[in-house]
Image 1 (tube, one colour):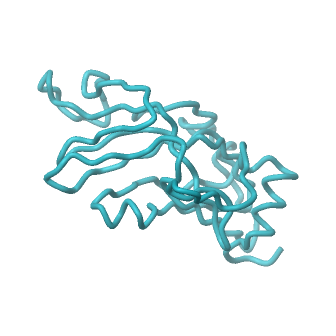
Image 2 (cartoon, one colour):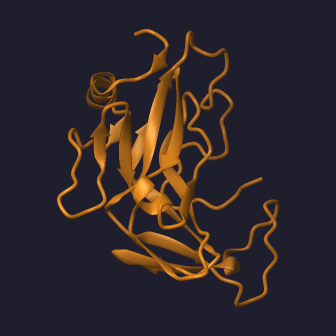
Amino acid sequence: MQPGILADHQIRDLAQNEGMIEPFVEKQKNDGIISYGLSSYGYDARCSEDFKIFTNVDNALVDPKNFSEQSFVDRKSDVCIIPPNSFVLTHTVEYFRIPKDVLVICLGKSTYARCGLIVNVTPLEPGWEGHVTLEISNTTPLPAKIYANEGIAQFLFFKGSDICETNYADRAGKYMGQRGVTLPKL
């Protein structure tokens, strides 16, 4: 495989033969829902029905070195209403196992972006695996709805020109093997 962005058939091969994406949906599903599944040069993942909605009821301080669970209200639902100018954490339905020579970039889907909803995820590093924790920001002054088990973000897979000397698994990264929504760790 040459370095560069992976095409649909390459993503399919890695998903089916190496377990890179589970569960894997081979074709875009879009019948009355926000699409998910394999696309031309990426994979549209779904958000789960587990949500942590940011709240300031307890007047907590947001501190990435000492993050408080009190900053969130937990909900399990097929929809989530994000308060105005706030955010929610969720995770992908899919579990990812990133090969040692691949880096993954995540971008929000245009359907949500056109509604003022921004998806933020750091790159998935070579050798990392787990459910991806997604941060979805509502940049509008209105409440906004997102739908569980429907497309939320597109993942783009880039093959490196060589295998890196030290991957995420080698470093025993703190977010390795995460399941569900994972809060900040130091």
